[in-house]
Length: 96
Ligand SMILES: C[C@H](O)[C@H](O)[C@H]1CNC2=NC(N)=NC(=O)C2=N1
View 1 (spheres, rainbow, N blue to C red):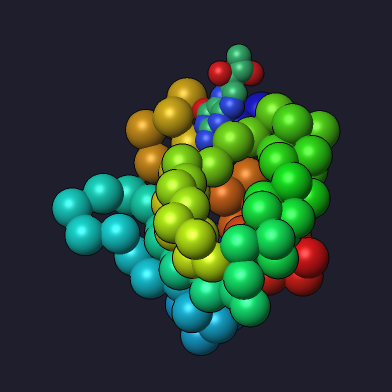
View 2 (cartoon, protein in one colour):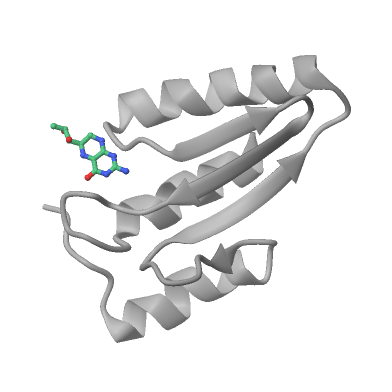
């Protein structure tokens, strides 16, 4: 079952992501990161890999792509804020 991250979980689960380029999205209970790749092919290949994990986990990013840049925002729409699924997908995206 998905639920909003507790205050304790925010410190333990979110902090490593904030130390790795993720930021709290202004005005939202969400996290965002901008990835810049070598070129469009690299960016789109990464999006394809991330999309397969998103679909597998039924947890989907808000994202946009311009040339070699991908802007990602993660939040859990079903709970109206950050859940463990957002941290899980963020860690996966960082690892791809
Ligand atoms: C019905 C379906 O399982 C839900 O709508 C899923 C799909 N993907 C989702 N993605 C995200 N980011 N948040 C959700 O709450 C969510 N819910």
